Length: 98
Image 1 (cartoon, one colour):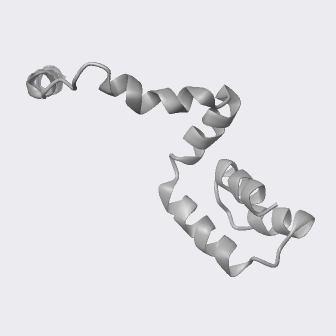
Image 2: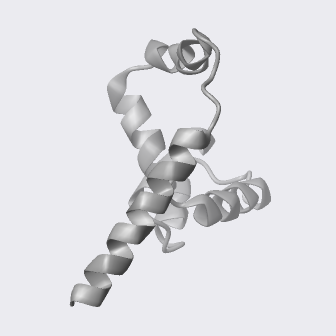
């Protein structure tokens, strides 16, 4: 157990050194990067952040949606749910295709 803690401490120390060695962004640049995000409602951002944790499923869903352009309404909802994707991904498909 002591060896594992020592390895963990060394890893954290190395990470801290690496992070502090990174160049600092110019003043105002971080604000300029994230400011447009603040224009969207928190609920919408939350949905997209949840979906973004499934990048492979997002790609699959995009391709699937391209191949199933004729699906609308309840048929689209049922078909998206049956794909086995995370509910956040299926919801984006339904929102995009509906």
